Length: 185
Image 1 (tube, rainbow, N blue to C red):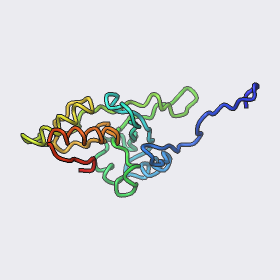
Image 2 (spheres, rainbow, N blue to C red):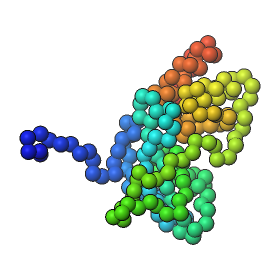
Image 3 (cartoon, helix red, strand yellow):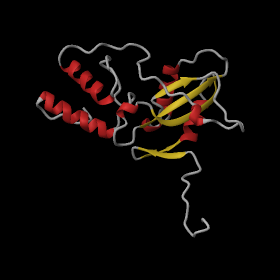
Image 4 (cartoon, rainbow, N blue to C red):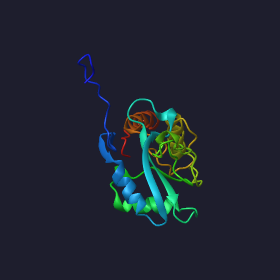
């Protein structure tokens, strides 16, 4: 309560949040990541990876930050596959980043604002879109997401897409193909 009788709402003080209607416990994800092989420290952060795709809807995505126990490079692809076996799909970070150490504030607490954003470029080049429908779909991904998509197997949501953009994508593809396309296709 403030002196004038008003209530000042400060938000949640725990690590629970909602992204696209799904309740997510960041601490639970952190504990699962810390149990992965050769992971000394782990933290999950919800952030907007692709600013160009952040029009309407909730564009936040989960990013996992890992510090290796041995100091050697982590196989983030394999670790992400292990997370998919343990966590529900909406709680699996879209990308894992290895850091030499987690950034700390002056008082020794995690400095979430200093965590780096992942780059949008694909880590390994995928299969190029075939001429025809795959090229049209890749171009639609590119125009909506604001990044060049040259991988036929690219994950729309991992590149910053969200449900509102998925609806726009379906409408755009329906017009281009002159047939009904749904977001789940």
